[in-house]
Amino acid sequence: MKEDQNLVTRQKRTKKRKMRKRRIIFLILFVLIVGATTFSFVQYRSGLKLAKKSEQPIKEEEIEFVADEKTEKITNYLIIGIDTRGEEQSRSDTMMVLSWNKEKKSLKLVSFMRDIYADIPGYESYKLNTAYYLGGVQLLKDTLNNMFEVPIHHYAIIDFKSFESLIDILAPNGIEIDVDRDMSANIGVSLKQGVQKLNGKELLGYARFRYDAKSDFGRVERQQKVIEALKDELLSPSNIPNLPKLVGAAQGYITSDLSTNEELKTVLGVVAGGNMEIEKFRIPVDGTYTTAKYSHAGEVLEIDVEANKQQLHEFLQLEEE
Image 1 (cartoon, rainbow, N blue to C red):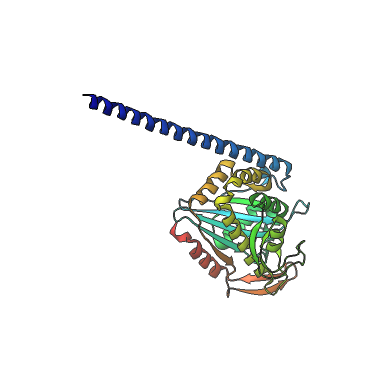
Image 2: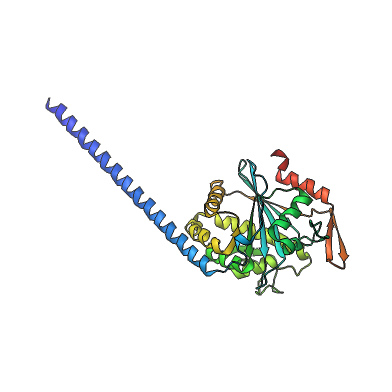
């Protein structure tokens, strides 16, 4: 009888110890969650303060944009890089489409050369980057729609000065890049060949350099290389604490049709996809263009539109939608 009482007593003590451990574990988790939430909120607010200090070159409410019909699998983002230099109108220096396949958890990046001789709706043919100058995001989108039948669901515009600031927030210690040659001509910085960490201004200079044998083609390659490096930095576990501040700051540095919630959802969706590679593509494709010169447009790339459209659709797997 006494042994049975002792057994019951021991069982009660063991049960109490387990309950005490569970309470401690729960308390620790609760503190960690509250701490992480508070830290994220403070970082986000810090980013918002930076955003308020920044003067967006273009206000979202001033932009005309009609998104194409959404699809279940693929979302395409039109990324436009501009250099306003204080001017109200500017040509688009960088034009890319970032395609996110949610089903396959893949990212694909398409760069459009700015010297493509393009049929711009309502105007005579000019270089592709003139479409943005003449009619902003919508006209550039319409031009890409008409030439390549590529759907555009969202847009993001970033001025080069804003790019510098965002890089310094995302990666305070710099972004690692293998600089393929010495660079300094017309980029505002001097870079030496080799692997190094570049700050915002240096990374922008690297992405814009085009004074070598490859000219604008080399510049597009470097821009794609920068996007890949930024993706790696964004998805790095060590960089997670910087993300709330980055999203907050983006409100002032990037002009986009995306709301804050949509931005967070997009970032989290990409992060959840793991360390995915970015597949890269360029328009025009090798062997589908020739150079020409016109008095009103200068030196341009005349492309085989149908050949490029077909290869673009195959790359983005648009026919599977």
